[in-house]
Length: 294
Image (cartoon, rainbow, N blue to C red):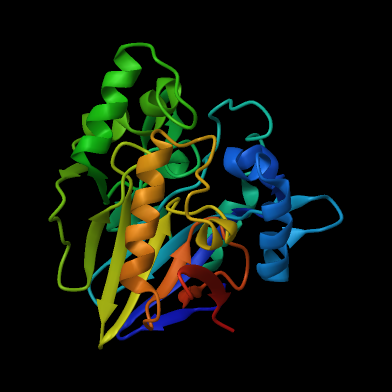
């Protein structure tokens, strides 16, 4: 991703992996049930987002680095290392470490870590294994978790309930050590770090998934986490994923958010969209469409 400047804030990304990943029929049940509509929508999306040869969507796993005049912030932390995840989540982690170093950063430089939600691929680098214990990767950082998101996964984990993307060892390895170390900020809907960084609950994909808003100098960008995984979900907001906690609520959150930003100059930064990554939501009649900022 090219460096994005929002007033006096800069945003770059660290990529853990990218390339063709999943077939849309496997990701979106409603797409699988409507093959003709899916074929039409695949013709609408931009070529970077879909690999025709493999029939798979192009999916990127990345962390955003947000630098303000006062703070260095990470938004979402990919899958991390040493977690023992099975395939396909066992891809090499060295690219993320090399990308972090290329940003000129050390772990000690990070002031805040925002997790849009607590799934496997958004909280992994929260912790590292040291002497057999999971400890916060960023020793000087405060980690921002929405308190309802954390409480829901805590309850799920204690009950031994497995849900796609979260709970179980994911919560034990990636989240509990942060709270135990006293580095967690469990926040509510109105949380704002300062006049530049705020959150917006957009629940459904997870219990209280949040977007991170960045405003400076009259400009506006939003890291949207997994509000949408692919451009197809902008064109068809009702297409929730097989990983969603509440698919109907996720669709409602998407439609509401798209209605707020469509036709504006708001820069949208999804976690899983491939280069050029940043784009806009446009109104398209009574629908929406995704267009990269080039």
